[in-house]
Length: 350
Figure: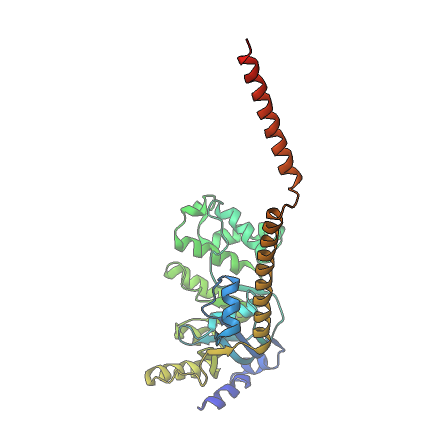
């Protein structure tokens, strides 16, 4: 299977009747030319230093494209896996879909209520109890207080933390925090579920229960985006898969086929993307002109302040009248001296 054919297969139905019916559903996630760029070696320094560097040197900015030219559609009820090596851009793409970050270029449309299992336990307050954090985290995820209270017992039972639920979560282990976070996130009724390596929480029994909860969402027609390095889970959960490397889509198609191709690419060392994710841009001319004008204006301020200081000194030495405050101080000193002289004269008188 060639790369071009693989990407084209992303929009083709699989052989199963269930997949064919899903292809008739409307697209709920559309990405057209999506890119996300970060500036590298960004730092703050003095304004004059920056302006001089921009004006008189070959000033360049280095960027890293975490994602570039991403195009795909995901239809309602589909389960799609994002696979690839570390740093391929999978989590960045999930963050864009969850709208925690925004694309630098292109358009990304998401239709439906999104629940994201990205960083379990994020946002929990260590001094609050587990019950209080369930309430806070549920509100952050878009539930009302009444909805959270109605599901409170179910959330606690799923987390298996009944004995510790009224303890401050600063006393929880990392596994207990993750289980509580997954239980809260799984209690939301999402139309789109985003899962980023969140099924490795807890022990084997809790992991299996988490798997079953995800399968329940799938049977209910929820659209699922799944990121994992466990390729066995991809074939278990997902209809299709996208293989990413260096922020670009290398292949897309049926989940099992893409997993097999990914393993073959790893063995053969063929995970390089056609374009490098790094980019260097030279500063445009108008910014150089603006930097020169900034330097000139700062020089004008400094020169003007120097001229004012010199002229003020010349006025004082040329016999110009002193300021009123200085004249008052001198008069007070003279009066004090006169009083002291009079008192001395009285003491010397016979």
